Amino acid sequence: MTYTLVDGSVSNNTNQKEIKVYGCCLRTLEESKTEQVENHCEENQFIPTEIGSIPQMTSEDALSVLQSAKRAWNGGMGIWPQLSLKSRIEAIEHFFEELSKTKREEIIRVLMWEIGKNRDDAEAEFDRTVLFVKQVIQAIRSPDNSELYGKWTVVGATNAFVRRAAIGIILCLGPFNYPINETYSTLIPALLMGNIVILKIPTVGGLAHFLTMEAFAKALPAGTIHFISGSGRETMPPLMKTGLIDGLAFIGGASAADSLIKDHPHPHRLKVFLQLEGKNMAIFLSDIFQDQNAAALDHALNEVVVGSLSFNGQRCTALKIIFVPREYSQLFLTKLRDKVEALKVGLPWERSGKSYSQITPLPNSQRIAYMKHLIQDAISKGASIVNANGGAIVGGPESTLMIPAVVFPVDDTMDLYSQEQFGPVVPVVPYDTIETAIQYGRDGSYGQQCSIFTSEKDSNDTADILDRFSSIFGKININSQCGRSPDILPFSGRRSSAMGVMSVTDALKEFSVPTVVSYKKDGLTELVMSKVEKRSQFLAKL
Image (cartoon, rainbow, N blue to C red; front, side, top):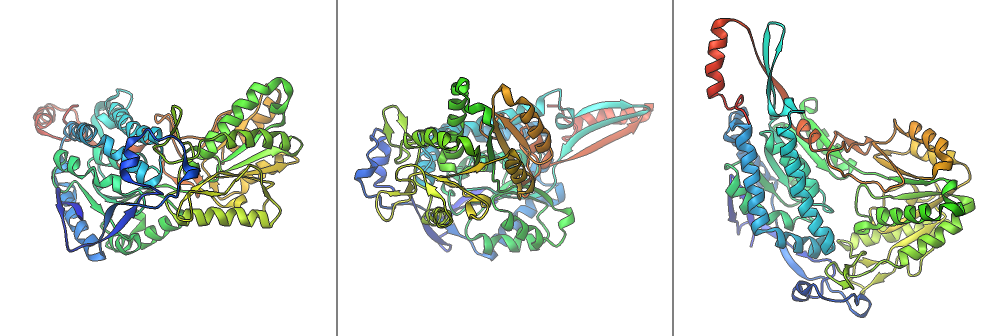
């Protein structure tokens, strides 16, 4: 059955076409629900199983949704933007209470079935999203963020009240890999600031969003949030071309973002927030390979394995290329190979002992084809797969469960050197001088994060790299993998990796503008303002 959320109502529309959604290499849904299955993937043929369907809206459908959003915004005078900040916070809290109470378990299962996220990671995605929103609301209420919660100040003879207010209609496009967490990191701050949101549901990873519609409908005024699903190429350009979209929150590929922005007739007035690609690099300095640093090296290798292969490497913050000194490359590869081969490979709900599978199926066959291309291209130019069965597909011809591949030596002639793999392939580049790695960071297309692994002996080199990379990357990690958390810190990027800053406070600022109310001190105006404050929703205290 096809369901939609438009104008605050959840309804089925039998006139819309829909496409079937297949789980990533399920055997049966009933077996997946037992959650007690031991890891026995090599004995089974995995056949994709239908787990749902997604409506395929047309251009006309999308434009109709936009008109509903326009009515709800009403030039900034709609119900949601005119509510007090306190009332909006209460509505969002109500939404998450309803969602956590009625849909948490179902959303977790869908994340496992559709995109292959293991049970622990699926739970963590939902729970981290709830925590993120709680932190966002705490940030609004914090005395340290007066621009967010609103405060009167006196500047000379002027009394001024500053509080941030909405931009307008925000078009929000989230990714498949963290469909709830990454999407809500932009969507919820945009709503809290009073914007009207149109959510484009991803074709892959979209089913979880349909489980949120009833909670949205109960918690928010009609017209506050709208869903659009279907082909992005058919539904998104018509919206942008109207010029009615005031803000674009986009997490995905740069080419798609560029195309959408160009479709807007007034791009100078389009508020843009982008989280795009990355080719995050890890640099191992030679000192960490000394005998006395065995524990530090083991820690660094654990960070690399998790950093490059957590959720199969399908994270924008994943480590996607590793630089090691040539003289220590064989030692590094031996230790890395052993750790990668020890990873548990299976379906998201399968356990081996107390742990769920660490390597799970990719979402579709297109991702498998791309991984194979990158591996074969590297092999054809002199690289090899270091670990046993690296790149092999487990579970039959229709399976998308790939054993990770550690590829060495990778160089600048190979696609894997510059292209983001977004999958379970770990390229290792040997270097003779540290300038090779520094040049890669300096000249690359991306500038999200990097990791430097070292001991105290090379602290001078570490300081030098840090200084040189401070104008290149949004975050520099010392002896740890790349990552977005903790969410109170800015998450940014340079060049083709990002535009805008994500954190519990920065996200609110990305989707709002400061509004100032001021008056000169005199008896009459002060009397007027004392009455205005009692009636105004915008000036209302939290």
